[in-house]
Image (cartoon, rainbow, N blue to C red):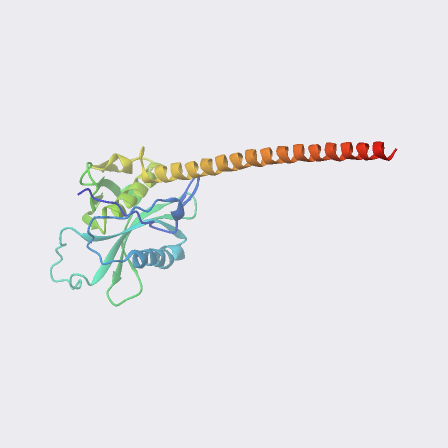
Length: 254
């Protein structure tokens, strides 16, 4: 069975240099693949909104994307109390400063069990990102790796759709904001790196909708024009009939 996608918007909106692509412009495709998270569409959306407000807004930043993840391999930290498995939830977030020149960061954010607040943990600049590994270029999968100058993490997202959206926004951001050395994207599906991309498909669908609406209005205008024309003809016919009747009445009166 082919894996499905569940494209969840990662923030309330994506803001690009050329305008804003809101979450309502993106298609939602329900996933048929199992997720390691319980049903949490609303909870995840709420968490992302809270992360943006708690972590990034106070620092005059805005969050572009976020994905909830778990490690594929356990991180070995001996003799350090890190809490048991499942004691916290991890998000990988992509953010940009509001001030120019824009500075882009990738931040690891955690929410510990029993707490409603979020904690900023590790953070890297976009220039420190060396490689994004999509694991499999031939199919949708939730796994991906991030390699930085001084760190390497192997992650699995809640669904392939979440990973797909995050990687695509990350790639688009790298193309616009990485000045000197752009990070390498390997083993990623072509739809994530441009061409037949989700955001382009969304834009195409919006354009198509506008064109259809415009065509419908034009057709309606043509129908209204024909009705007005027929109404004018009927009014002229009625006026001619009235004039003829008046002439006949005057003739008989005489």
